[in-house]
Length: 428
Ligand code: CMC
Image 1 (tube, rainbow, N blue to C red):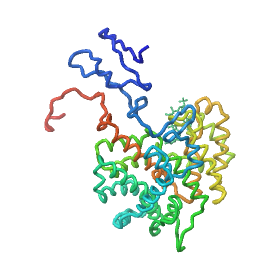
Image 2 (image 1 turned 135 degrees about the vertical axis):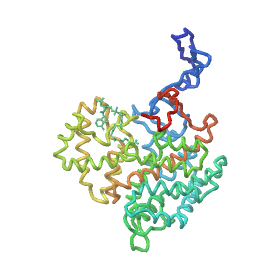
Image 3 (image 1 turned 90 degrees about the vertical axis):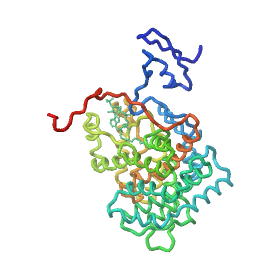
Image 4 (image 1 turned 90 degrees about the horizontal axis):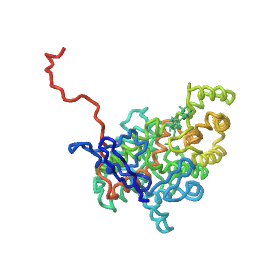
């Protein structure tokens, strides 16, 4: 049997053989289906890309029914257990795990590029005292393009790698400066003796001490969170990165757009919503009443459910373990008891079971961030730091894919047909 789909056009009686490859038909193959010679050809209509693959990708694999997440073929569980964020970022970007020599060179490259130009610090100081750190983050990332005009050379592989290094190295510094700005504290320069996440903690929390010594447990927990958030295939912000990058703009401008997409409450803001929900519930005793409200459609159990995962989000399982490690150092977040009780009841309740609603990555991440001392405004920024490697990998893949062109969806025009202009004086 040929791997084709036969379509019969009932209007004309004509039949079309459309090839099926990798479980998909090419939308352009439908263009041959016309009712008249001047007919444009059949289109597909797919708001929100619910059933449209926009690219072929080798970066991240997700099986939502089975709860599988893999970067370049490696299960997320193995990476979270045995890798570190910088190694994972290398894997995501370049497709293979680095050898020891490659890893050391990569780490050195990143460490050498953590500093920001002093003028960046100056314009960050211009933000209002209560500016949202994600607003500061995304505008500063965009502004980096003015410091690195060589980044426009997107066709040059060496230049692309240079920008990848700069971006991955500098986003923690930008994020930390945004945090210190919010706190009204002086900015802290990177300490190149420390690990990637250890240095980030240094830039966030160093006070008067001569040398900041990060807790190895907290640095590791943060690193695991970074691994878990590094990529998630074609989500809203990855799609933004690819779409903006398809105009051949520099990667800093494209990444500012991706970060803006992440800023939205439907994407990177759900963990904040979880914390607000837990605060509102207030006590374990109030959990059953809250669950009833959710079941009656009066509320939503934030941190539960996912467009793709119809089983336990594999990242949530790992995060739960990281939460235990963090709370052993910082003390238990009192909201954890409410979260555990919510999860216990929901996983037994027919409403959630029948709809395949399980905890997602955001159910526990906010509790960890709060225990680490972050205000809620920082949550999307903490997401953006590791996702930078995913965005850059998606961007590089898009640029080197010969099938890709400038992103330009079609529309179905449903507005007026032609109308004749009426001068203002004659309008009723
Ligand atoms: N609480 C209660 N009911 C829910 C929830 C929830 N969190 N999520 C879905 N449902 C119900 C929904 O009401 C619907 O019920 P019915 O069939 O009776 O109408 C059914 O489950 C299917 O839901 P849906 O809204 O069609 O599912 P979706 O795939 O469009 O939405 C979602 C996915 C993540 C937006 C949604 O589950 C949700 O709003 N969850 C809470 C917010 C949240 O935690 N977001 C973080 C997602 S993970 C972040 C990331 O990976 O980027």
